[in-house]
Length: 210
Image (cartoon, rainbow, N blue to C red; front, side, top):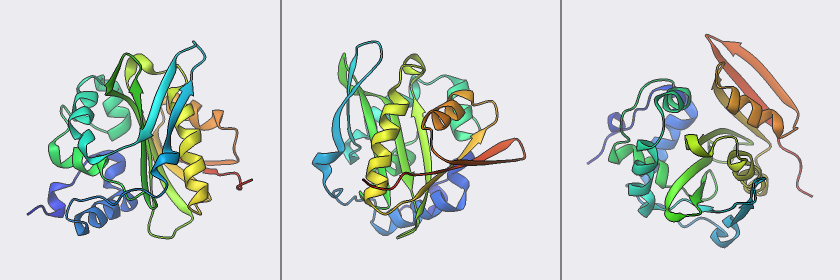
């Protein structure tokens, strides 16, 4: 039987919102609900270099692909995302990332155009049940950074969040994580920012549904 002690990651995942996510998932006994309108959470992203990248909602059987994805990340990318080192993604933590309910916990993944069994990027939000504010996180494989995958996935995640009544995303970002900061600013949404202990707390206001 897994306990909450099995679910500890350095950095953002040790903050209240994502720790709550662990407790919620444990109450599901590590099983996921099928996301609402799952068919709406898949499609393609057209990149500026002409490549077409398929995206979809994450699924529980993506755990092995998530672990391979993590293995391809550089130490710098891992440090900036997790606020510390993480040489491998253990099964329990991969299970956490792969289980979503489609409402309060949503994650989208982008797939390698040359090998659709491989993940090249992931974005997700987590919120307390019914809240209008959600924690946002993104992770893009190094060789795909700067190609527009992250911003493309994020725009689609925002569409899902707005449909679920979420009005604001917030993110905890290392000051040296310039790509993440640029991604958030590229959204061109109202933004608030403050710094604490070398970490930027960034909050963006999502546009209302049209």
